[in-house]
Image 1 (cartoon, rainbow, N blue to C red):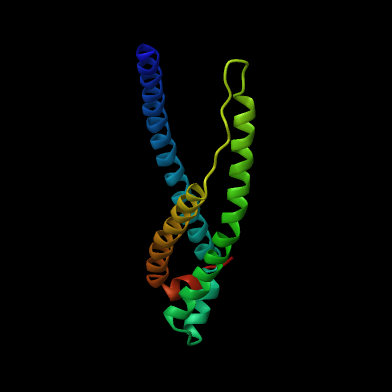
Image 2 (image 1 turned 180 degrees about the horizontal axis):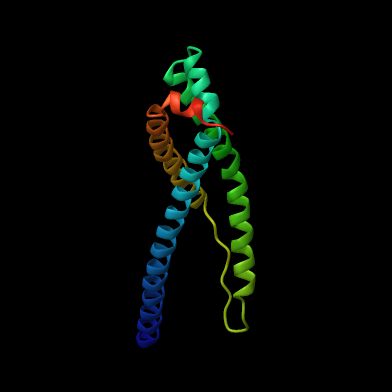
Length: 151
């Protein structure tokens, strides 16, 4: 009886270690992808609207107001994308759970609200850091050079 429990405990410890290593690597990749996607989206929006923002600055808008317009769009996109991403993620997890089922074992689908909170928090953090970087870039926008460019 003790040998069976020790074997089972050893097996579960090994599985837990492997799962922790895999999850750490996947979380690192996911964080990098989230930061890259959010930052590139904000940077592209700045590039697309640079002429508009420069015109608004010359017309008398403050830097804070112009930056709020740029970042407001990014905030709206981020908060609309989070629920959609969570739904797609759940669907992919359900699909993986079904595909991993065999006659010997099955992997139950267990997603806690804490998982959703961590995911949403990571996206909001990446968006906030990207917003700070893009706001600094928008602040250094050369108004004359932007208005001289032809589209």
